[in-house]
Structures are given as structure tokens and as C-alpha cells.
Length: 267
Image 1 (cartoon, helix red, strand yellow):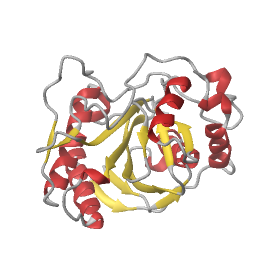
Image 2: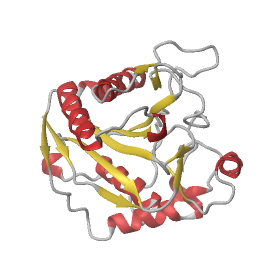
Image 3: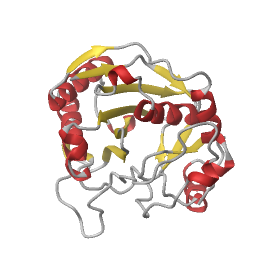
Image 4: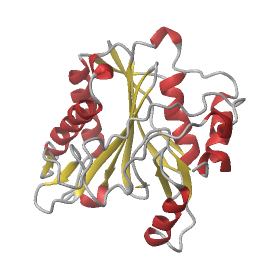
């Protein structure tokens, strides 16, 4: 297997979420068995929130977190809570159908990916650990593995295709969950992620909150180390790979859907 390392890109919230989803659903046929990884940035101050979140609750949280700031906001295709992307290190990983981690329980795939993240951060002298014990009020499945599929084409109205999934977690980087990455000394949450599993594969969307790191990080070296560890986990060979050619207009169309009130406010 090959782990395709896609070029770095910067985008708006809707564009970034649409791109991640297309990497799951529309990767070119010749490479459907490849795993895919990308690290990306945000064009403007952005928040995303989980597929199952109620928009009223999200707005309540944003009023407290960023009351005077104009924000780029969209709903993710994955589960999880409200995520602040104003100063984070964001990545997406797609594991193709048929791989052992695709078939594993969501908690196990979450644990293994975050274990690789912990080792890469510790190589940068960061005192981080996995949260390996679940508190009485924490969920055993932070990953928010969502069984229902959001829209896959520009022609499919979001309001018609969406089905309500089970309720998920609420606010990320406030309460750490099982197999999150924590600061060893302070207990602060350093990194979390959310998942979505479809017939095509398993999508991870992960976020590392930079203000929690305690010393200078060489982010390029960190990324190289992290993708090397992911390749080992997947029993794959990591290789820089050009962007795939999606169908004409497909990314723009799906981005428009992720910008639409039907998508953002459907719950």
C-alpha cells in the first residue's frame, strides 16, 4: 500500500471540509487502495463543528469563544464538537476500505493514530501522553464515527439527503476524551480528531492546538516524522503525490453546499 502525501493547501472552512470529503469519496479510481494524507491551513479565522451538532448550541459557544470576531464557519462531514482553527495544526487522513484499520473499532483506530501523533510530538520534546482512562463523564467514542453520509455531489440538495445521526460530543479542547492527546504536566488537551466511515474508506480530521506546546516545534520535521509513523502503522510506503483531478466543478459545487444554510443549519 502507498500513503499519498498531498501538497499543502490553504482554504476557507467550506473548501477545506469539501476537499477532505472528496478525498474520501472521489479519489481517482487507480489509487482507491492508497491511503491519503494532507496538512492544510485556513484562509481566515475559522471554526468547524461536528456533523451531529445543533446550530443553536454552536452559536452559543461561538458567542463565548469569539464574541467580536467575524468567523469562517461550517459543519464538518465527521463527528466531534466545536473546533477552533485560529491557531491549530490541521490534518486529514483517509484509510481505504479493506485495510485493517478501516474494519477496526473507532476507538482502536483513534488510539493508534493518536499514538503516532504522541510519538512525533515527543520527538519534538513535547511532554504529551494519550488519555488512556475514561472519566465517569467522558465518552468512550470521541471520534464521532458518523454512519450517515452528507451530500456527495453538487446536484444533491443537502436538506434532502441529510439524516440525523446520534448525538455526539460538544466542545473540543475543553474536556479531553478517551485517547485524546494531553499535556503530561497540565492535563490540557493538545490534540483531538473526528472520524467518518463510508463504503469508500475512513476519514480522520485531526487538530492540534498550537498554544498547548511548551517549546519551539519544527513543524516541518514534525510532519515528516508523523507521516513516517503513519506509514509504518498502515504498513505503507509514504510518497509525495500530486493532487487528484476531481470532476469538473465538483469541488466548487460541494464547497457551495458546505457554505449553504441547509448544510450549516440543518439541525
